Amino acid sequence: MIGRVQERQTLLSAVKNRDSLLLLGPGGSGKTALVQGLPQTEGWEDARLYISNFESPHDLLVQIARGLLRSRHGTFCSRAKAGPDHEGWLSRQTSMHLKGLLWTALETEPRTLIVDGVNRAGHQAYRFLQHLYFVRGMAMIATARDHLHLGELGRLFWDPRTTLRLPPLSDDEALRLFETAADHFELRHLMLDEFRRKVLDSAEGNPGQIVEMCRLASNPQYVTGNYIKFALVRIDVMTKYLG
Image (cartoon, rainbow, N blue to C red; front, top):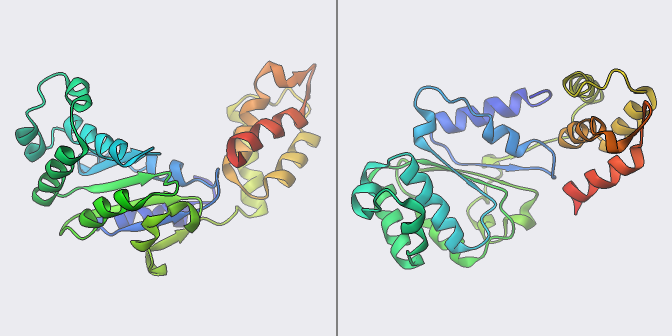
């Protein structure tokens, strides 16, 4: 996590202390890398539920329920009686039934809920998560590009003291990340001087874009001889992060 040491420590502290936290930053700024890079030690993995890019209120409920089943959450499993076919059971559940099961289970055995990639959450998702947000022992870590993408969840994360904004990397950090990525993706046999300059100029300190451009450069379709076709690399990266 080059350039994200302080942010990682803040996130670790929030998870350890069961404090809620909002991570804001543009696509590629490192939000997902931070929450997915939390250590799998001290039983933290059993106390966390990771939800990614939920598409609807029902999808949110299903993802949480799936996480509780997989982690063998005692209260939820005993009440749900899902049997060995978890996916079959989930496909038959209504939102109302799941909502009641989840509220009861998490009030009894709280968890840290990580909601990654919030994209304009609506009122139903807000009301469900609002209930959990104030459950004793629960904590909520959410990530979004900005407050607009939070949608209704902005009503939960209104306090700037619970918001962590991910700034661009410094020039030195961006260069160090590029060199690390160039080694990782084995780019040293290619012409890197011009590519390095263009990557760093266009990424403007965005770590995800730097890594992704290096990753694409390792694909022969973006290379002619030992020359990297930067324009094609940049178009595909912009499509991924800005589209």
